[in-house]
Amino acid sequence: MPHDRKNSSRRAWAALCAAVLAVSGALVGVAAPASAVPATIPLTITNDSGRGPIYLYVLGERDGVAGWADAGGTFHPWPGGVGPVPVPAPDASIAGPGPGQSVTIRLPKLSGRVYYSYGQKMTFQIVLDGRLVQPAVQNDSDPNRNILFNWTEYTLNDGGLWINSTQVDHWSAPYQVGVQRADGQVLSTGMLKPNGYEAFYTALEGAGWGGLVQRAPDGSRLRALNPSHGIDVGKISSASIDSYVTEVWNSYRTRDMVVTPFSHEPGTQFRGRVDGDWFRFRSGSGQEVAAFKKPDASSVYGCHKDLQAPNDHVVGPIARTLCAALVRTTALTNPNQPDANSAGFYQDARTNVYAKLAHQQMANGKAYAFAFDDVGAHESLVHDGNPQAAYIKLDPFTGTATPLGNGGSTEQPGTPGGLPAGTGALRIGSTLCLDVPWADPTDTNQVQLATCSGNAAQQWTRGTDGTVRALGKCLDVARSGTADGTAVWIYTCNGTGAQKWTYDSATKALRNPQSGKCLDAQGGAPLRDGQKVQLWTCNQTEAQRWTL
Image (cartoon, rainbow, N blue to C red; front, side):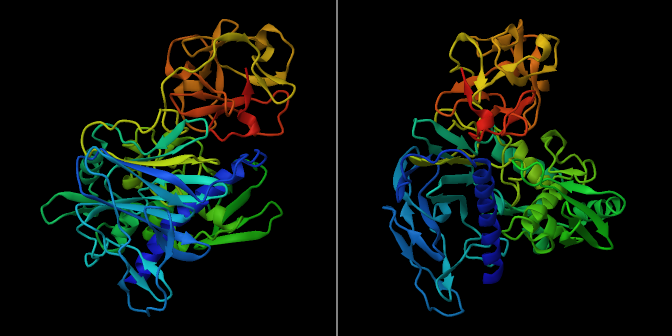
């Protein structure tokens, strides 16, 4: 079934491309790196899994041409003109590291995947003009069905490196990914909680979703299929989500869903209401711009078919946001989407249990459990515009993994520290400072930006304990929140992680290690007097550049 395999691949890669667009949009106005991204960068793969041998594959597309890369980073197009019947592809495998060892290869500019398999090589096929047939292990006849393997997705181009850990198609062998910046800091994501790999399977089976689990002939677990694949091959019922979708459609017959798809464009909104079986969305001028037929369960879990998202700036962003609201079961509880409060995700009994558990078992709560998990920046993705190196670490299946890199990730919370001690203003922009409104030290007074004046409400003492203090109170993340948009206020100092901050002199970011997120001016640029301050995914925009 080459058609199914191809579509599976495209859905997974589409998720990464969408993340690239989202990150790129967030970085509008940021100066480009002084040096161009080289044609290849080093990729180090470390094997902490305790298993082997490992086989690696670097597969992807360059300028619309599909192919593979060797260990030196040289790109080789697949042979063309082979006809409509799949034939074996050339052996593109690279010898990977043994247990406890590392191997460094060159990662070329591509949009694609790095596969790794345990114990034996994978089988790849090509059709027609050099198109790759991706593994589709939801089909028992797939030649890779009984092989333990996984992959990471990446894009390396002149804009930098985007690399993620993914569970879009299945949950399988655990790993982390990372990118090294020019200042030596390694940004990483993908690490599981202690024993998180097995805990996921145990919880999935306990919730009645065990039909998604595929086992090897010896009975060991190989993977759990994404529920979209599971429904398509009859492994689980669609009933879990069907009734929820019906209730959502009925709910929005009499009220609007307001979609604000771009965090940096809060004025761009679309309003949707259900008419018959169709969810119709209008622009601010009242013109209908998108319509979606009531989707079946496979469409919801896969964010495809009835919820197909084209690569445009209207229909695609609406489809992505609507699908995320259905998968996370927040559509009934919040008519304003995307929902910024991750604490409310997956709370309905009819929710996507697979995605819920994937996020629960990640050390930082970030995962790519469905194609558009990047809506609202909940995906396990790292990016740098001037990458020096990339990393993949194959983690142990049981026990506790060790963090990749130096713990300074925008996604993986690090440890408090790295805050220069001293007292003075926290400046942002050319004329504004962090300010306690009305110099009122009452707990929960949300801080703001105000014209620099030098008064006590703008004098912040940075302690060696990671606290930032003014008027005898601490800069505090409201209720220890971790979601984008969480208010930052002053509060009685209590030594919790909500009051710890680090400073990155390269990006000028003030980061809360507990959440992994940055101190941010609500609404972004243009910065202005009275603008409130919040927690937000670190993005290096003007709204997060603080001068001590």
